[in-house]
Length: 241
Image 1: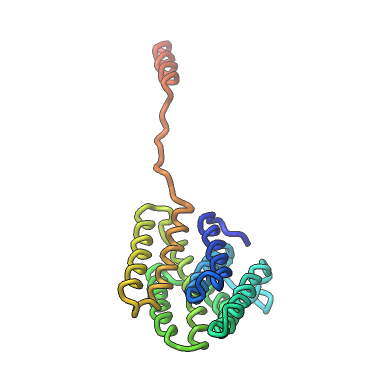
Image 2: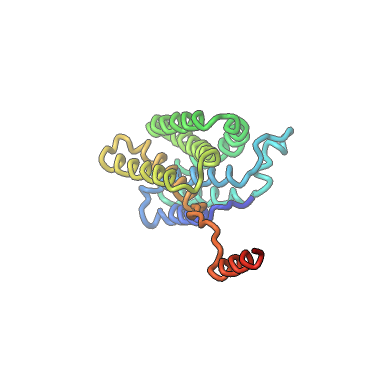
C-alpha cells in the first residue's frame, strides 16, 4: 500500500523523525507528537487501502496489516523511544502499544466498514465526537492516554473519509482547513484548558491542508488556436468561397 499525497507523506516522515528525536530535544512534547503521528498514520492507511468492505475470515480482518507489515515497525521504535525518554514517559510506551493494537485489530476493521456508509455530515459529527472524547480521555492516566491515542487513530481515519467525500484540491476547502488549524493553535496558546482538544484538532486540520495542497488544481486554460492556425483557417474558408 502506497499513499498518493507527496506533501502529506513528507510531513508524516518529518513527524516520525521529530517524535524519535524528541527525547533529546523536548521530552515534554513527546505525547503530543505521538498523538499527531497516530492521526497522520491512520489518514495515510485509509487513503492507501482501497477496500470499503472487510473480507470474511481472520485473514480478511487483518488484510490491511498483511498488505504492509513493515508499516508497524515505526510504532515499535516509537515505544522504545518513550522508554528511553525517562521514567516519567515509561507508561507512554505501554499506552502506544495498547493503542496500536486497538487501532489495527479493532478500530480499523470496524471503522472502515462503518465510515464508508456515513454521509459527509455524519462524518463531521463523528469527528466532533472524537475530538470531545480526546478532551475527556486526556484527563486520565495510562488507560486514558491509550484511549486518547486510539481515538486519534479513529480521528485520522474519519478525516480521510471526510476528505475523500469532499471537494479536494480547492482553494476554499484548503483555506477552511487552514483556518481551523490556526484557530486550534491560538486556542491552545491562549486557553491551556482546551489544549487536549486543540492538539488533535490542529493536527487533523494541518493534515487536511497538506492533503488539499498535494492535489491542488490549477486554473483551467481554455483551448485557443495559435495565431498561425487562425490565418490558415481563414485562408481555407476564403478558398472554399
